[in-house]
Image (tube, rainbow, N blue to C red; front, side, top):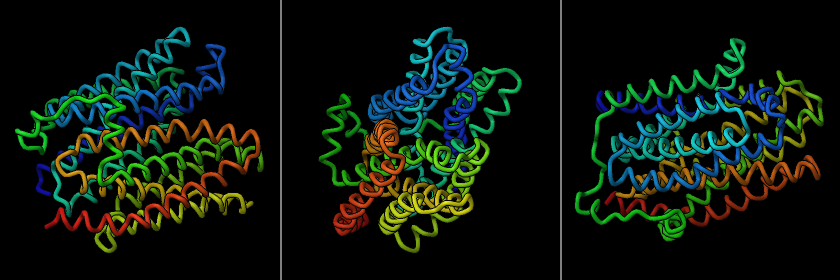
Length: 398
């Protein structure tokens, strides 16, 4: 990429980091904050689901609109909505206000992620696509990883300060983007833009099943389900089985996330060049499945940390690999494809924790057994489809 496109990519990475850090920054203060409303874990679970539900509804619409009106307007709108939602969350005086605020936080994220992914596709060639998606994915993972640590530190000033800090950074990012991001037209012929029709969510979901890359959407849903499944229960599991402290749990999650960021930043492009995206997907589905099951067979902190890190790294490599493959296969429908990626990811993020929590109450090992089975089935489906993907990519290149 030239210097201009590199600068655009770095600004998109900054926006992605700000968005995801803003989501994670509230995690450390939520138990105490919800206590002020007389609420606890169940409400927290529904607040998480509300965010993912909103993102699931609006992400396809955002992708569709970015194809029609360009990426920049949607990104700025998403940053402003995210910032205002954080402010209202910190100023809430009743539970219903918290839910409304989280709904709008999800809407803001929905109007950010698909346009940014589509923007990366607009400014990269097929050969550069893997690097661009990998760096964007790394900034997403880094935001998730650093957000909670920042929130814990800022909460020492006063409890709701992390919310206002996240709001301020989002609004500053919106101002910077309004000046620094170019208003590039979507990479779609003008005649085709006029033909694009705004479709509702269910119509877009139906259309996604008819695309040549629908299997990749299924993979996105499955690994998002598995990741959310693992993340939502690992703290409960090690606390219940080994009586781990919050500090030990934080180390497990943070180290795993950090190694994943390093892999996305420095390893993923080399893997794509050496082996291609599909082998990366297949290998990491196997690694994710074995490490998910493996957590049941290790009993010391060091080995649990190792297995968890392997799982987080495998899933961190899966996201950019799947994103890149879909982007290459989507052709002129980059906004639609990016919106559907986010929709399927949000669907996994909704169902994964809910089902995992239910199974955990029955038997702590059940979420990991189910996750392993689902990832294994997904590997078989992907393996069968892999030859078809080669044919489609060869057609695009020629």
